[in-house]
Image (cartoon, rainbow, N blue to C red):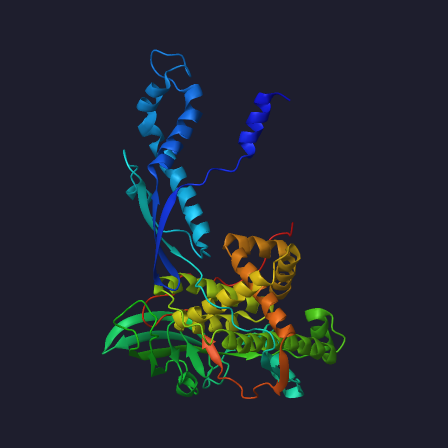
Length: 487
């Protein structure tokens, strides 16, 4: 091995020389940093020298063979051409070094304007950028938490109710002339007004007759009482209060008048559970076999309720001292991710699209509040994951995707493709990590079993309509039935 070869290899393996930086950091809020970076003039010239070193062997200057022009002439002729390259390299390297030295846990890309930065002819380069970071905090005590664990035994009445929902998938639906009853399907025209002026309207909206009608930005709490007994052709009125989190400042918190016209009433006709039907829907030998499957499905969904209750109890204790000021812009950007995470979780446990849509409407009506809570939980759980070396593995993704596929009658490959297309793999990763940390905390906790809340929540019918006239951004599409052959 020659000395020249050794020198080249040493140069290739040598650590890049650190920049000489002056970094000033301001903290407008717990999650925001305004950073001013000053790069020495020597470093600026060093980056220019490197750019010219790379260019010199092939530089074409009139009157000279390529690569043979004097270095000073090359520098003078091409300085403007390499300036953007040098600026880009300097900014990337100095931002990365400043972030490392300041020990930022960034939660977004730096926000700065490249074109506004100019390389000086003399003196140092100074530029500024904003970056969102995980807040700094002392990790709360998480081992040995005392928690209540809800438990439930499913009785015949519970199974009957859930079985009826399962049978709805195989039911016929037919118009009725009589008055509307609970769970009937209604086709409505809906108009919202303020002081007699129309704000928004929707035609031929299909809803179920339930206690509450859930819009994307409000709830009509007395919907069931108001509409029960209505017939096609009837016109009814109600009121709903717009969420405080809509973009329309004039309508925030305002009570709007609602007018609905009933166009049609339809009712489900449940199938007869004879031997032919049982065989058709799943090869069941008896109604008892079907009821066993229904019970298993209920237990799986209750396990999510149990998991969410435990998580809520855990995070309530972990976040009680987390009085961080989270900027509204951050919350608005993260709001859709929180909805996406919740919907992924519900789909993996087999909840139907109507229930998922209702939960989505609830989250969107309180998006900033629910997102602030979720972010605080995430920051703390992420810190525990780092301290305890909790990591994701390929098998975790396979398990989650298989579970979603099984519940949505899709192939695992199509589920993965949909998640990747919608940019939800990072959301799935967070879900996996957070669930593992919750399991870790639960393993160190002390439990007291308590009966699950027996009071049935109000039944809700969700619709994709905003009475304020502004549809929710980034609404989550329903899971589509798989088409074509599985590859």
